[in-house]
Length: 292
Image (cartoon, rainbow, N blue to C red):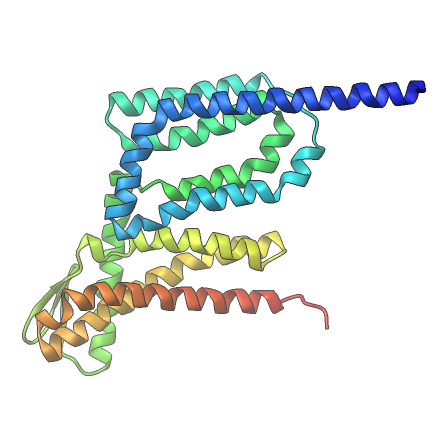
């Protein structure tokens, strides 16, 4: 056997050894992360199961795994270049976990695992690996329910917008209406646009869905970003029209007709309508700049 053959065999042995070691490290790290975060993921999974607004959380890790798998060719072509700066990012993620546990702040605890994953990728694999995996790792933020402080800060302006839009639409179709803040006064009943009707939670689900759709449907990066941003006003406006429909039912058939089954069904229906609008926006964006 020639010298070149010996070198190739040695190189193959090195690659195989490196792959085996990397796989072993991956199994060990997965076990450590599981031991550290199993209770956090268990409680978050319960919230996904019991709260329909966050049921999309089950799909987010699966999509993250797919996005990472789709990049396997790029990842295999990259050389391993461990970066010491990953220690700082890893330490920051663990500090988030400690602070969140001490302060009983669920959002910090849950998002800390995302920062830890990014730190491990940088520390063990290198900057190029982290750059390629940045989108799959960042996508995991969609699985974490929003913190209460954000919900409280954003939901009230959304409640006011939904009430204003509903009152305007009801007046235009001939229904007498008086709005005071987030309360809509009709002739025979009163509707309150509560926090649950603000649309902020369905907005997070539509953002996640819009991100996936933009990723698959658009090639240009600016089109992807624009489509993701469009999902925000689409979700807000769709929710406002859901409140309008509730007002119409309450005016003609009483408040009972606007509660219970209708309230749940209308939420799903409006979400489907919002996604159809998102699909239409994506179709229009796809045609922009397309050569004949």
